[in-house]
Image 1: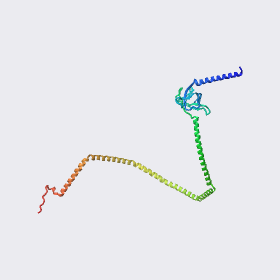
Image 2: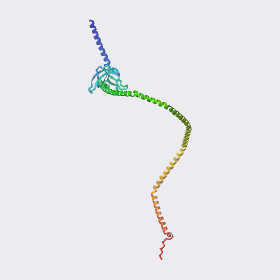
Image 3: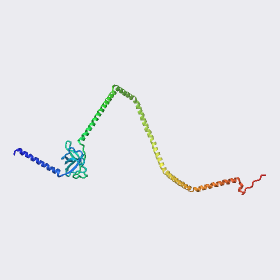
Image 4: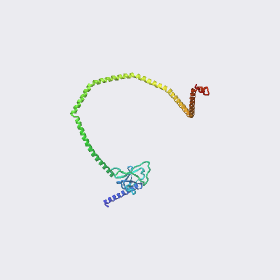
Length: 320
């Protein structure tokens, strides 16, 4: 056997050994000691059998199957297997992701929550949709169109602003021209001369203000004792009021008690009057009758005084 045949035989043997090793390691790692799960996505771009499954960012398994879901054709059913003992729980969420921008897509599963119940083999992992490249392209296109419109508007506004700025600069040049500078210089010169003329008057006014302030200090010192006497007077008045407050309060309480008694007496008298209302009417009626009889008796006595002595009326005298 020549050298080339020996080399070829050695290479073939190495390839066979490598294939057996990969097959054995794959079965040991993913076949015998793995837990199957499934999840559902509306977009599974680039996912195929053998795609990596990441749990918390580390490799934990492989995708075993990708197919449309018979119960809902708008969703893709993804079958996957992860290492036995991977803590996939009810709070874990599966979504389409990747390790980096240039790497192939992968199924990323979040770690969920510590107190959440673990999923058993064959259960469904909750899913979350990711933005596809087409959607991102559409959004970027819309943003680009909006930016173009905004740029156009900004250019138009910048033209108007530049025109206004040019007008402002022109006005400033006119204001700061030679004629205006001369007028400003004359005004400043007049102000300086006015200040020089009025400075003696200002000094006199300042001296007068100082004298007034000194007089005010002396007046305040003289008023101080008066204020102290006023405070003492107010304190005495307060003391007097405090001393008279209790007697006045007692007198008011007694007056209130007397008024309550008078009110009670008036109520009793009103009750008595209401109870004897009929008797009072009869008494008044008897007094009226008695008064009328007395009036009649008085009239009779006045007209016939002899009736008090004689019983019979004397005969009238005959005319002679």
